[in-house]
Length: 53
Image (tube, rainbow, N blue to C red):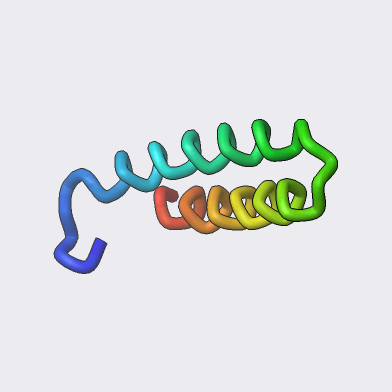
C-alpha cells in the first residue's frame, strides 16, 4: 500500500478471505478467547475490505 503496488487491492481482498475464515472457525467455540479472536478477525476483515475498495 505504501509504495502504491499494483497488487495492493488483491492483497487486501485475500486478507478479507483469510480473516473471515478465521472468524468463522473461532465462532464455532464458546470460549471467551475464541469469541474475542472472532471479533478481532471480523474487525480486521472490515478494515481490509475498506482498503480494497
